[in-house]
Structure formats: structure tokens, C-alpha cells
Length: 317
Image (cartoon, rainbow, N blue to C red; front, side, top):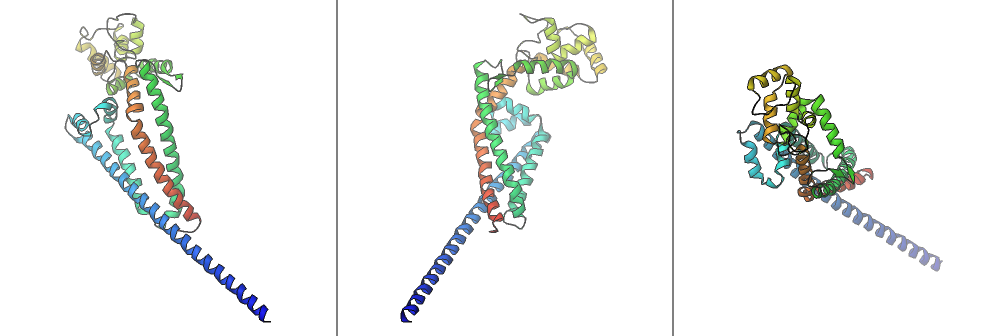
């Protein structure tokens, strides 16, 4: 009986010890989980607060470009110190409304996430927010890598060829350009103005044609000359065509052909293929490191929200 009692006491002692050990482990696990959860929520709040500030900055830049002085674009360029990607900046600065919209979207999303983090809506919100950010970060990583490779290939071809992953796109772009000149002349003129280029290849819109450029190439690659040819039956030099003729052509087509001819002449030595290739080079090389930083930043937010998603699914939030 004594042995049995002793054995029972030992068994009870071991059971009590195991229960205490289990309780301590549970408390320790809960503490670690709580610390991790607070840490991840802090990362999310700080990250989204910074993103909200970026959104506000984009809104301010867009509003300044839209309602600022005539030289607002050049002043902002100087302030931001973006001279090494000036061509990219010039294109973006033409679309002030889209800059404002992008800033507003970033600001609203970041602000909503900031206040949603740790709230009652978090369980549902994390399940959507996390995979979307993960997908976005992977897409940015992929795009940055592809653009970097394409930029190096473009530079080696003196900006006269565009290829991505070994696949040449120059002929495709040229076919689309000719189609645009014939079927949507006004849009191609606007593109020449925005990108500050003339024709598809360098010096292609000089009238009379020089070198190996034919009159047919001038007509099919230069939107202003195409419209002049349609109106008068021949291509004409900007120095010889009269303002009355340009006004009559503009009145017939319903848009400003004179303005199109001005930009086409002003940038005649810079074909749009070269200019677009240089923009691709600037995006792929100069913005390579910033692109990786942005993608990594988004990935960090995604990982933090993924952990909080797991906590939510496990009932720890």
C-alpha cells in the first residue's frame, strides 16, 4: 500500500510538472506571438504612414504642375534634381491629372490601411491586402529586371533598335507608327509633342527629303506632312507653306496642324524611336535601384501583413 501511494504521488508530481511546463510554454508562446504581432502591426503602420506622405507629395506635385506658373515643370525638375531622367520626367509632367490621381489612390489606400491595422476589420482586410501586395511586388521585380536587360540592349544598338529578352520590337513599333500616322494623325502629333520627337527615325521629316529617305517615307512617317499632303497633294517645307494654307487644313481636319508642324520641325533631328529608346534606357537603368527598393518595400509590407493574416486565421488576433 505504501509503495502504491508513493507511486501515485510520483505520478501526480510528474503530471503536475508536465502541466506547469505546458502552461509556461503556452504563456511564452503567447508572449512571443503578441510581441511579433505588435512588431508587424508597427511595421505596417509606419510603412503606410510613409506611403501616405508619398501620396500627398505626388498630389502636391501634380497640383503645382496643373495650376502653377508657366515654368512650373522646369522649376519642379530643378527642385527634384531629376536631370538624369529628364526625358522620362517630361513625359510624366505632361499628365498632371494622372499624377494627382495616382497620389490620391496611394494616399487613400495607405491611410485606410493605417487605421485598419489592429482593428476589427483587420481579419478580413489582411486576407485581401497581403496577396495583392505580394503580387504587386513580384510584378515590379519582374518588370525592373526585364527593363534593365532591355535598356542595356537598346544602348548597345545606339537607340535605333528596341528589343526585350532577345525579341526585336522595332518593326512592330514602326508598323504601328505608320498605321497611327494614317488612321489617327492627331494622336501621333500629340505623341510627338509630348515626347519631343519628329517622325520615326532621325531626320526623317526633313523636306525636301535627304539621304536615302523617300517622299513616301516622309508621308507615312511624319503626321504633319501626311496631313499637308492630304490637303495640298504634296509635302511642303515649313519655310514655304503659308499660314493661310495651314489654317485651311486645320479647319478641314478639326485640329491644329500648324502646331504639329512646328514640333515636327523643332525636333526634326530626334526620331521618336530614338527618343522612346532613350526613355526606356533611363527607366531601365537610372530607375533600376529605386525600382528594387520600392518592390522590396512593398514586399516587406506584404510579409508583415501575411504574418498577421496567419494570426487572424489561427484566432490569435
